[in-house]
Amino acid sequence: MAGIYIHVPFCRHKCSYCDFTSFPDKIEYAEAYMACLYKELKMRGEELKNYEFDTVYFGGGTPSYIPPKLILGAMNQIRSCFKLTKDAEITLELNPGTIGESKVETYLKAGVNRFSIGLQTAIDEQLADLGRIHNARDYVYATKLLKGQNFSTDVMLGLKNQTKEDVRKTIELAMACGSKHISMYALTVEDGTPIFTDYLNGELPDSDEVAEMYEFGRKILEENGFKRYEISNFAKEGYESRHNLNYWKRGEYIGVGVSASSFMCGQRFTNTLDLDEYMKCVISGFFPAVTSERVEEDDAKFEFVMLALRTSKGLSMQAYKEAFGTSLADDFPVALKKAAEYLELNGDVLRIKDEYLYVQNSILMHFMEEER
Ligand code: SF4
Image (tube, rainbow, N blue to C red):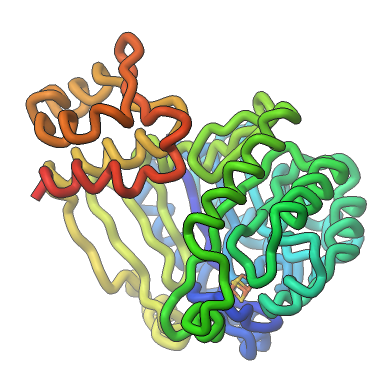
């Protein structure tokens, strides 16, 4: 099974930390852009007739900012151009500052059955610092509009003036509003974004403080029945994100829209980041991919290890052997030795020990060095 990712690049305002392909001043292009995206879906669908897809993910940008009929149109096009399973997971990212009752009705009509809400923090001053267009009350309102639909909440760590108590309040608000899935991740500070100045000024918590917040949040989530299934992702039983699980299993996916990436048939390709170029390309009947590379076997092996070790389920030695015909011990003897104290082997499954999952990057470095 494979996934479909749809990139909707429009936002009402650019957040101070944002490095994604998102345009805060181009909403008037939304209809024309989505018409191109429908065309790209058709072109890709013709290529991928033999594939079956079981997840669709509308990300951005802010998919809930554009007229909802455009989401309905995209779903109609997906259903007519791709084989989509009946019980497909269909997720839409939702910004609490852009939502209303009739929008939700249209999303449900389109078949959306999972929402991912960007709360980030329940503290209004921190939301303002981040340049978010909503406050905590907007989040509560948005969750009420969903009337019991399945939704996930994003929680961000490492914000200016953020305390552990703030993290607790944020998680408790998400749980009280009925979130069955919580993505808790550290703010990534990218050079060139406004928040980079705060970082240089020493106004953001350092990595040890963020690690403590993470540990603090993890305990609250686990005490409340949320199971960590990936470094940043926690879910009640049965509410794991199928779309993301597919990424971590190195499953195939097709990305449609400006800047979207794909992994199909051993090939990775990424569409242009330029909105005009994207639209011109698709209108002229060309695929808008600007980079394309076949994943070499060594890279594929490292990706397999990296993605599997991010998850709490870990890496199946047998699955590795079936995928590559060689054993993990033969391919990464040095890394396995260097990382031994952080890893545990249970039967066939190799995992990063719970207490080290948060610092997995330094553990994975050993595997990366050996791959080269
Ligand atoms: S809403 Fe998301 S995509 Fe849009 S500017 Fe903020 S962080 Fe970037």
